[in-house]
Length: 175
Image (cartoon, rainbow, N blue to C red):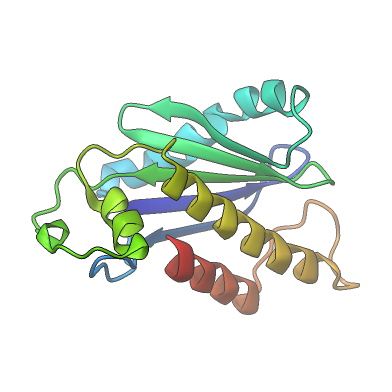
């Protein structure tokens, strides 16, 4: 499973981007996007901004869940109070040759992680929605701490290695 996180500013400008893979079920945390697919990630995420803007006024929730789909890519969204959008692109590894999902275990965490590695990825399953929501909440916590810096200006890209490390840690923990 590969993921692409984009944080989009109030002027629809990218503030932060990060690619990572799953760390569950023997995953190494490395994104497995093909080179031509890597260029499409930004397009796919930015094309879902219209849907986010439609949905955001119909709900009082910050976590908008699964909002869009493009072929086998799924987009989940989270909104901040300052109208900053966190968009997570999930792409099941269809070209992966590993058979790590063949291992059997009966714990809840292995059931959640096997949902990420299976070929029939379902972004609306309760386990995946809960893991995605927890990931977004931890990234949001790191985001708030980062923008509280007195030198940060609104819609300025975030290049902090500490913030990137916290995003990577949240990804490893939940996804």
